Image (cartoon, rainbow, N blue to C red; front, side, top):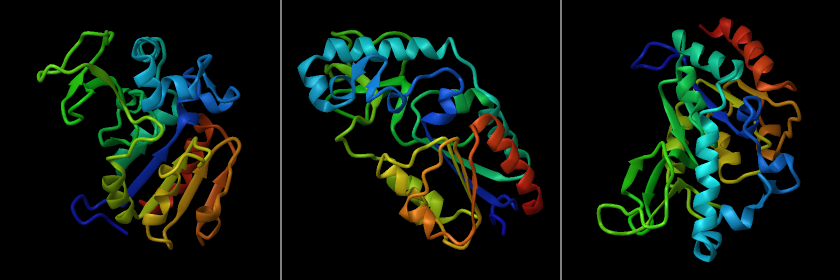
Length: 238
């Protein structure tokens, strides 16, 4: 099974919060629904933004600053290393830049990116952002800038692109996700059913879509060790 353009088998990797948690980035699903001591409704919804944009900006400014205190872990690095032998496309639910810093070159961010801002009114106006976003910071058309994040209750504009990538996969790897956040959790249904699937998570939750797959390998380990095991198994697919 090979990608016609590159001559290499095509791997699609779906990553979630678990892989970033090993680098020290906290996830709300491990802390009783709170994200860094904030209610998700207050900092990750359009309603929260409408109620208190100052709080939302402060929250994401802190998350952005945290990126400079953490490093990619072995899970990120091994995924990047797979590009030597495979055509690898990472589709991530995470908003950090750890995949980029580990060396992966093809990354699709389903839920946005911390290191970018966008116009409150014109979502197509997106800007690089390594510092803070403050009230009064405006896009080129005069509207307030907000975090370039897909909040709960908002559409996932990159989902169609991700589904198209999944449809062309020869191998599919899922890393560090509880498969509870939809629509990302159902991304694998767009991939061919008869290809090998690998699911790496210390507490894997095999949902309905995964349970129906004929070639599913579950590795109940953290990304830092589990992805290495997948890489060993993939030597047979080179």
